[in-house]
Image (cartoon, rainbow, N blue to C red; front, side, top):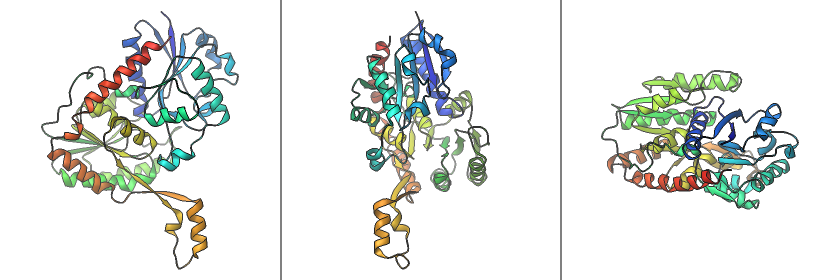
Length: 378
């Protein structure tokens, strides 16, 4: 018997709390008897170094951590990495980029300091665990091959492993998870209206995963924008719920919903893990990675356009527009997203959710790889 030190990212976002909860449940199920010690991943571990080095391993517990400055921005750890004497093992980490398209993929890089930590990580353990194939391919680009594509820990509600997807007999309540990014606020209002138009007698609950109040994690400007979105949604939504800082409230809210639509990846994952239908609006690389991994269609929320396309041809000569085309892009909301989503949902309602029939087997298949990873832990 020993101890694992979990570096967790649960600050305010419901999805981060879900990741931590499910990661701990997986560890307790497959590594029974091991103690779990949680530390916030955004803080250095100097004051806990002696205890950390007495543990079996440090486990980097989920989230979109593979960003250019993976170390020390996402995981500050310690300045002298050699002072960490135990394995450092990623558990369901994922690649993140905005907007997350092919250009984002091609331009992505790790800093020298990040690569230093990644080399230590991959030399210290049998396998690391990642949450989608884009992440696995990214790590392979840098020469890291001992990676298992296990999926995100949040994929697995152990109560539903081996159970089939059962289409809901009736849609009484829909959950619409809202975007944090201001870019999609107007689009999300259009989507709420489109769902009410499609299912006018259905209760529509709108959720904010990271809250709507200003605090140490949400700026005043961001909070003001979220408040404006909330005010606009009151005309359309039957109920608006703040899920920030809580796992329990989110689980209770979504438990009573028959279907999810929205931007928040972990609301989407929660529903699918419990064999309920969900429709994801892909706002960045996280959603793309998940959808490609399980083969379930999502609807892009954005489009990338050359900045030159927004320049008035009468005011800017061709050479100027050409320079902007080569050097600059702008990401904007897709105009057709609400209409496409409405059509997608209608198709699934009419076909008794035929696209979702194989999702259970896909999750169950990846669960076997997750078990292999958990069994490989020291």
